[in-house]
Image 1 (cartoon, each protein chain N blue to C red):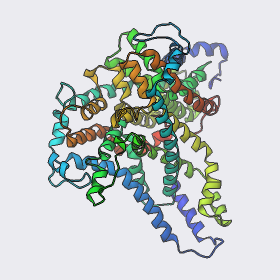
Image 2: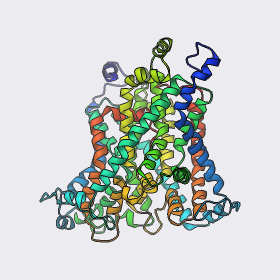
Image 3: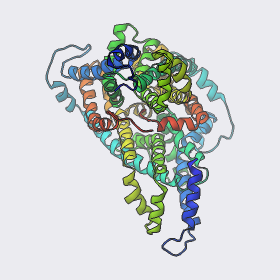
Image 4: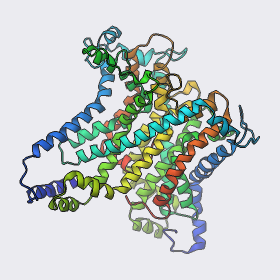
Length: 301
Length: 306
């Protein structure tokens, strides 16, 4: 619907030509790169492309190979553990911090600045700092041992079984500030009268949060969920910087598998198949949300 | 502004008779609240502290001491070394090369992406045409698609145009992938402006570009600042596109930093590594600390970054 249509439809068509030409970059990006590129990758994931993409269809061969490769299985497992933990920790820590910040505290801006600054840093910087702190020879382990607890063991980045949690520590550090900010905005949007009413009824604070406030903040939680979710699937730089996928292949992630196959191993078909697999959770998560959020009606805010 | 209202309302609540006996637990509650906040603050500040402290120590001191202790003897040598002498492969001219590459990449990418997105947002807000909302929806959904899916098609596109591996190519990539969030930002902003403004200009005979340059652009300064903050930090921090779409000569700072720190050859110089890490984080950090509220606003406006 044209916002300004005082002159009727016909002239509207010619008039809008300027708008169409001006938004050509957007149209091309949407159709060629985003839609076209995605379809292209999905189609070529069914081919036997190696060094160069070629249209020699082989059915689901690439996917069979993919799910028979240990590196990929480890990657998916890691992503799942990382994803579940990241989701829970981000939401819980983000919400608790926001709730604490909402207690009419002093120095609110200072606290906010402290919690949010890691979000301004890149994953490379994040990964490298935590690589250093978790370094068993010099970092936390060494410090605790030098305090007298000589059998203390904390070397997540060098232990295959827990390396993914070492990455998690860094990821939580980098990302929870953002969630806290979103949650805080949500809390501030809640009517003060709700609190008054709960107070009058003698409902304890934690109950008010759990049964009244959190259900009211559903849209905020959904936004946070989508943000965290889509960031989880993309996790790449952090792993590259912090562990390089090691020790061995213990901290590999799907995004790294894709890059490896596309640009190093010259095994394009595998890369396409793996990236198509990455697409599936995103589509399940995002498409319904985007449809609700953006189709037709305008976002308020 | 809401703070004032909130605090008065809160006082009213505190004064109101609650169901139970009067509590004196306010201070105990405060202890818990501030205690938890400080504990969290400790976790968030620690890495920054460790980075700075480590970068100011000499290697002997690092080998002996613990990473949390402040430097006994402050030295700036690691900083100098990180900036001018650190090696990546055969090049030993330090991070300065990556820094200037990042500047060369970030400045045009930020400008181009903002210009393109502001025009998009303006058209979507005021000149909607058949299908414009559909394109926009595709764009927004596209923002969530893992880059890995569109990486290779993008390589092919750039190769076909003949700008793969060049700075121009990388600028195009940043413009394309920054477009969803920026377009959303500008569309929402222009939509929130009073419609009469646009209508009056139309009555006066102004066209698409006339309205854009004379009315919308001057009014869009605040949102421009927000967009700029988002883009400067986003593009400066990018790693994936830098690796995929440029040649080693153009590698941005993040890529070079990773190559320096994670290189397998040579003795590890942790102090130099940390100095290099701070140097790489310095630009987005400076943007963050200087922009304050705008940064938060950028996030709140629709944080689809990442």
